[in-house]
Image (cartoon, rainbow, N blue to C red; front, side):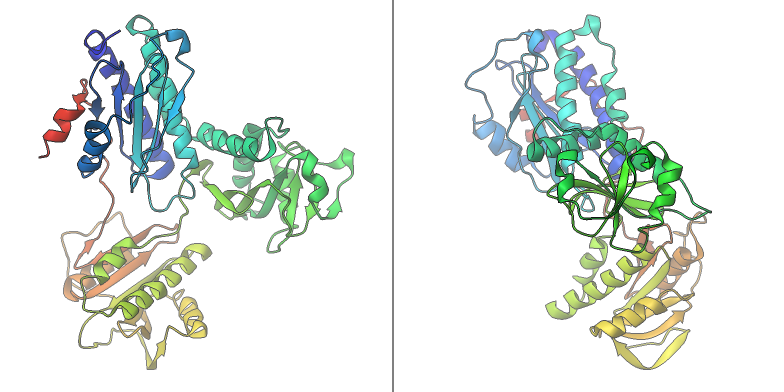
Length: 482
């Protein structure tokens, strides 16, 4: 099999697989791009398909890896044998900053490396790596079947792969720590976690922790109370478990499950290895002991930590003449206030005033500003941020006022789909050019406004973009940017 015989077919496979991968990851991690570098046969050159320019900017290092060196090639090439399509030999991750990659070789595809974005707010890259690993397997399977048997189903698999990616990552970690004879059925656990998260109790959303412990490690659990064997709720009884969560709400205690039933309540000490479902109202998190896996909300899993990184604020501050200590301290104060609002689920507005001459903002002005580098005063500011209106923070890292009203004239960037906080911030910063306004919505999205516009860092994803039918030669693609 050579590339000349299969270029149209390979392009079609790549097209469908990349589209499904991109759409699935965008649901899991927010707007995401994907790309692939591959060679079907050792005698043909490498090809690339990068429809959204994910790999633009990495040309020098890709040229060094694939053109200047032959290290990526395999010394022992397994001749094409489609019976071996599912035997994947992993290849070294490229470890490129800002990217997640996974590659492999098989009897059907000599070399393939898949890429996507490493979003800064990921709980863990593990599930995404499992997603890319499955892309390697799907592409190998499709090429092995050849065009006569091609169904195009790989893209659909990858589009709906969220729960499977989380499952595969957790199973890999369990196998690594406990061996291959684990008793817990992870799919059942994941289904129950989502079911419990969607089950209100007298209108209230769930809070508290539920841990899943391998039966052979139960002797490491310090039980405060155990339920009788015939009264232990099955894991699929979501309503019953939701009621039991009330017993550990706002405490360090946890419900304990062996993956099949709820066994009782334990203290804060964790066993050697366990899966933790941390319910925090509408939002929740899965952890392996203290290591984050993913979050869950509205009946689905996500890679997001749901904590704003505020890179946009950090970058804007670099444009102002502030000493390093002041800049870092101001950023830390703003981050603390934003994360407090996110954690406690309320909306607020922060005005970061970088004007050379201090000008009060209409609102509750303080008789003497409060130093926010003091922990007690920062906690007070966090409480004041719950009031209607904005906190007014100067570049001296002091709070000058709260419940401030932001006014201004109409600007073209207004969005009627957004709330009053957002549009008031647009108007205010269009007039007060040296201010940054951070708007935190009660449902957790955070917007950074500067000079009448929302500052966005991420690539604007276009759902209608699709891969070109024919992948490019890697060398031609690299030279096209020179």
